[in-house]
Image 1: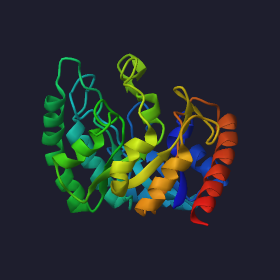
Image 2: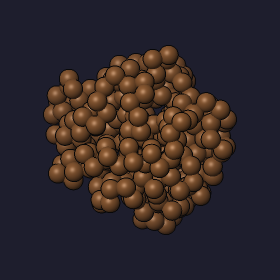
Image 3: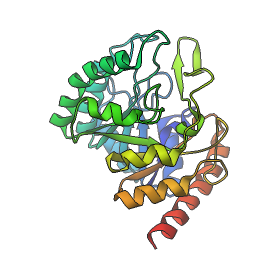
Length: 284
């Protein structure tokens, strides 16, 4: 397993600042965020992909994945074409030599049934997955929505359009929260209100572990992100399942980026040390 850091941890700062701090922190891999006004460190509609790859290289970094969360259940709260945006992100990722694009399905309206939501997701994936196959870029679903956060939800989504290029970006903290944060026209919101019932992260991971291509390695107390090892998430249990499944990808340390650069850098040091120790204990 490899260790990395998400640029969203420094979303209040420029990409150059984020890359500099992540590189100085001893990381070799960075996950870039391309999530509109939430964290727009990368903009596939505007940025040159080759120049982005070269920028990362100057900081001694490789881009492990690209976050491109859009609403795939409904167009509620959306003023963009989600399918076109993700298709473009995948093509951009190929040009930037990024192997993974991360997304999620979003929030299901109360009046919509799960079957209706799955039908909507399927129709959109039928237009997106062929682009991932053509580009050789994995499209990875995160537990980041009304369906994927429920037990069995990720399996249902993966079965909609069978493809080896449709995988999982597992977030270790969202199942415990039973919720996820996303920008809307009203600002940043916990998208599922009071949230779904809390799920056990190891139980949610186990059935899909062999489909995991990337991990958001996150720890929380309640809803609040903390330094790895200081929260309630069974991180070592998740690592054990990933190891047993043969996972060799990147563990990307992630928060929501609410802290100052100084505090985040302190957490980053602690979290990197936690990951290195945990992997060493696991792999011997």
